[in-house]
Length: 70
Image (tube, rainbow, N blue to C red):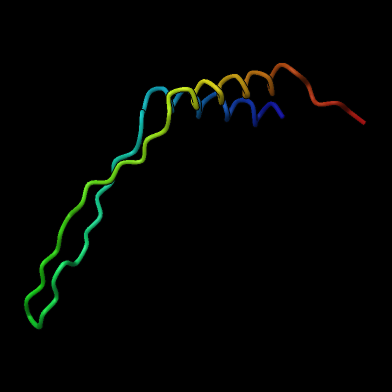
């Protein structure tokens, strides 16, 4: 449970530092015989700022509250 808590805290901190991920995709617009036209698109995957805070709080809860032993 502690390892999960540590991972959640680290991911939450990274979500505060990095607001999203940018990546490029290449799409074929026209392909006629020897002629080929490609288009490059910039894409962004963004997440809300409060998501990082929720992960940090959940991670701290997992670290502080020990798992019940049966």
